[in-house]
Each structure stands twice: as C-alpha cells, then as structure tokens.
Length: 74
Image 1 (cartoon, rainbow, N blue to C red):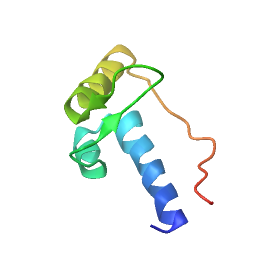
Image 2 (tube, rainbow, N blue to C red):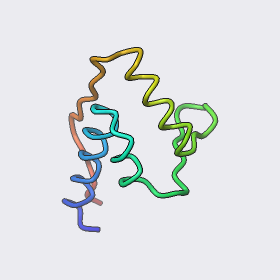
Image 3 (cartoon, rainbow, N blue to C red):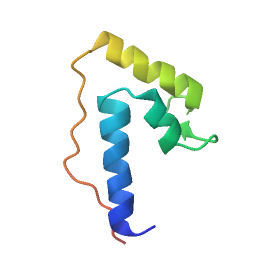
Image 4 (cartoon, one colour):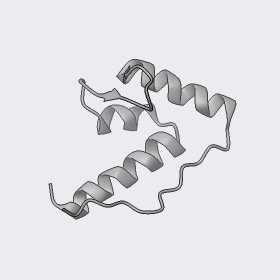
C-alpha cells in the first residue's frame, strides 16, 4: 500500500470509528481477525472493541481524537 493511502486509511479509521463511533465503518476498516492491544490489557476482538467504543461514546459524548501526525515513511 502506498504511504499516502496508508495515512488516509489511519485518518479515516480515527475519524469514522473513534470520533463518530460508526460501527459500520469499523467493520469496513478492520479484518475479521482484528485484535486491539493497549498497554498490558488483554487483546480485544472486533465484537468487544465495538462494545468498548460504544461505551466510550455513551460515557463521553463529546469524545474526540486528534491526530497530530501520521508517520508511514520508512
């Protein structure tokens, strides 16, 4: 995948999934074997990650992730 496409994909994931909480976009942008790992916590599969994102948006309706920089070169 070209560098520009990879960066666009990351930006789309952040905007659609994290900022909008769009579960349809989550399904479109991840694979069935998707697993999310964060700082020593057990990995989350797609179903539990979708629940986690929904929980974040319910608890913090103004939740926004800002991407300062995406590095894909090298």
